[in-house]
Amino acid sequence: MGTIRLDKFLANAGCGTRSEVKALIRKGRVSVDGAVCKTADQKLDLAHSLVCLDEKPVSYAAHEYYMLHKAAGCVTAARDSRYPTVMDGIRSSRKEKLFPVGRLDLDTEGLLLITDDGELAHRLLSPANHVEKTYFAKVKGAVSAQDIQLFAQGVDIGEKRPTLPAKLEILCSGEVSEVFLTIQEGKFHQVKRMFQAVQKEVLYLKRVRMGSLVLDETLEKGAYRALTEEEIAALREEAVHE
Figure (cartoon, helix red, strand yellow):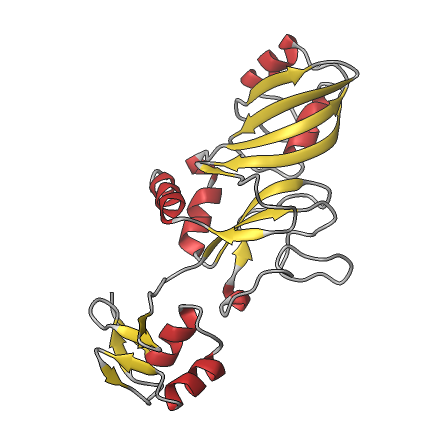
């Protein structure tokens, strides 16, 4: 697993900023393998060193993974001059390295993965991987069985190729229909453009699933939580099938 400086280890483990953890080290609150250490640049063996803060073991994570319930009116970006961003409420010592995986439109709500794991993000977003994304949508117009068939075949949205086969599930159909739509791509405004192709308008859109990761409905809009070890492992398993 390699080696790492003590102060970086503690900062990456969420014990504070680099300056804050250096202060903890100077105060003698940190021990390495049972011995108090006051040297911030001491090298640790990630596979074997036992680090404690105030006599409590500190676990190290190479990366951070968060599930965010994105709210409408929030931009999927690290910073923006006009709108609040999905990163504004994230609290982490590694915030500058965190980024959203993929994007949701300004008016779209729902599941967004935030991480600093670039390799995993690349593989999840790779077109070759066909990671499924499921959306709940309210659509102006009656969605029909014919639409289900058209979406399953692939829809012409004005690009070189039709969309990949998508699964459309009708919850209710009428003047305003409610549906689940599962796609395998992430083209610009794809869901909205697919419904436009069948003369319908998306009134509300919320992503509820990305691969194995399902939106935690106990999260309020704008709130986030760390992924569980099981959720991380499942995403990594999906990401190897590129």
